[in-house]
Every structure is written in C-alpha cells, then in structure tokens.
Image (cartoon, rainbow, N blue to C red; front, side):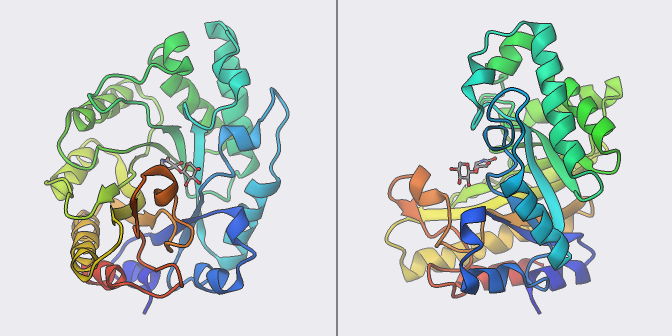
Length: 315
Ligand code: XIL
C-alpha cells in the first residue's frame, strides 16, 4: 500500500509531493515524507528558485536546494527540479536590471546551466520554464519576454540540456489542464519548439484546482500533449475549498482527486502526479487564496482525509 507503491504497480514512474526546508525538522511530517511507499518523488517548493539560488548576479547559494536533493537521494526518491526561469520569486537584479538582449541571454544561460548542472545526474525532470502564458493564451510580458521575445524559452531549454543531458526538460503552467485558450497556446508552443528541434521532453500541468470546479476533458488534454511527442505530469496538484470544510466538501474533494488521478492513469504518457505538499499543515493555499484551504490529502494533524482514498481509487 501507499500512493507511490500503487502508482508504480500500474506502470507510472512515481507519485510525489512538494516539500520545503522549514518542514524538515517536523519529525511526524518527515516520517510520512520519507516513506517511499507513499512518495517516490519530491519537488522543492522554493529552494531551487532563482531568488534562492542566485540572489545576486553570479553569487550562487545551494544550501537549501542541496538539502532537498540529498534527502531525495537518501530516500531513493526521484527529484523534480523547480525551476530555472520564472517571472516570480525572481530577484530584482534580473527583473529591473535593464539588460539588453545579449546580456540577458547570457544571464539565463549562466543561471540555468549552473543550477541544472549542480544536480546533473540526480534529477528526473526540470521545470525549465515556469508559467510563460497569461490565462488568455498571450505571452506573459515579463522581463524575459519583453527583452528576448519567445526566444528565451529555447535559450533556457538549450542551456539546461547542455548542463544535464539526462534530465527531462519541462515547461510547466497552470490553467492548461482543460480546454482553454492557454491550453491552445501551450500546444502551439510545443509544436513550434518540436519543429525547430529545441530540446523539450515534457509539459507539466500544475493542477491547482477548486473543489467542485474541475475543468472538463482532463484526459483529452493530456492526450493532446502526448500526441505531440512529449510526456506529461500533474506537477503541483491540490484541490482547495472555501473554509470551513464540510462533510460534503470533503466528499466532493475525494471525487475530484479521483477524477484528476484517473486522467493520468488512463494516459500512458502521463508519468506521474505530484501534490503540492501532502498536508494542509504546510499548504501554500491559505496564504495565497484568502478564505480557502484544506487542499491536500492529509489534514493539519497529518491524518489522511477522504481525498487520500480518492487518489487510491484513481490509481
Ligand atoms: C509557491 C510555494 O508553495 C510558496 O511557498 C511560495 O510562497 C510561492 O510559491 N506555482 C508554482 C510554484 O509553480 O512554484 C508555487 O509555489 C505555487 C504556484
């Protein structure tokens, strides 16, 4: 038993969770985190981001990132690197630096090759580019796009490939799980990168959902991506609700977890599911969406919720 054990038994590569350095001193928490039968993969929720790894230009700090990478190694878990290039948690020396295209290209290359290279051979997959699109399918006008246009994506992917040829390189985003303008934009980006021969192995669908409001056509969307020659994964799954939770909302959450996991189960190219931390104790949701929470399969007291059984039923 256990989510990863079941996932592997049906041919998936892993079932995983995000975690963060501040949580690792919580012994009851790590007792679950370290259990390979529950989690065969971990993702650092923050410690590999740009602000954490290169807070000033050329000054790299890997203490927290190394701790998560070492934990994965110790536990025999796969590691998802998260992330190289993202508009958020980006130090102001990058976003406000006023760099020209040649300089920003070199900054991206140095950042991606240093961070990806540090964990060469230890990472299953990297979210090389995170959240490139707006919800309407237009490009997010961050410093990367504004300076380099869409070329920043291939610059980052090529640098990552050179730094770790065995890591699977992903683009990761939210609101691309159903049929939307943003999904179409991502499908078109995959087509175009593949046509140009840019290295790209996977698309990460974050999966930050709301109880009772799952998008339709989850499986069809996964199939549209895999038909283009990339693998897919749900990389940050959580399903939040308005607080306080009720028996009804917890029951709906169980169904919704089952529905999402079933979509991955049914698509051979969906390699795994990662939840964005496993317990409500450490979920990012209440800090980000006011009045909402209880998004995870384990509660504040590290007890399994009905959602856990939903995942089991979907695998
Ligand atoms: C979140 C972390 O969980 C929080 O601790 C942090 O304060 C903000 O970022 N999409 C992503 C993740 O790709 O990196 C985000 O993680 C959640 C949304």
